[in-house]
Amino acid sequence: MKTTTHQSATTGFFDLHITGLGYLNRIRQVKPKRGEAFWACDIAALNGPADDVGYTRFDCRISGRDAEVLVKRCRQAVYQGRKVLVGFKLGDLWTDTFVYAKGDKAGQTGVSLKARLLFISWIKVNGEMVYQAPRRDEQGAGNDSSAGSAEQPEAGNGYSAAHSGEAAGSFDSPAMH
Image (spheres, rainbow, N blue to C red):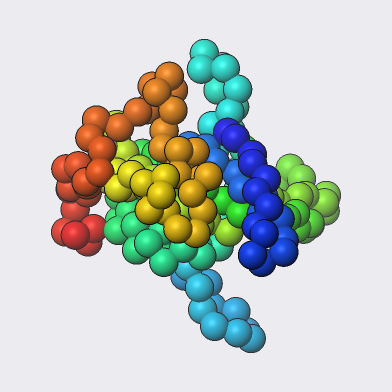
């Protein structure tokens, strides 16, 4: 997992982005009492050594338009119990505290990591590459040329894409086409 800070000279603020790979879970539409409905998911991000992987859970509001379309396409696979692994980019990390209502931790305070899901660079379902985002040209990226290379899976992580530039395969489910 990689965390980068990028200063935007045109807008006058700092972006904090988290890139990594992780498993999609709990894809859902959230309908708050006030405000508009939105899509959300959990990502169990992999971290640590490959022979002793740890997971960090992010509760994500899906903000990127393309990311929303892709996550919706993965919904059925997730609910069928397939392993949906994604390369992701998150932004605007914050924490939220809550109190456990039941179980061994009932009454204890917990902390949830929340973020906005901005971008999905690739998707694997049960180990098969089903989507690869087109590579961004360093000059054609326009709004964030420095993030272009960070969004591609790294060559040494074991999850590098079989194909580049085009979607590979299918999601293997009628609900995902």
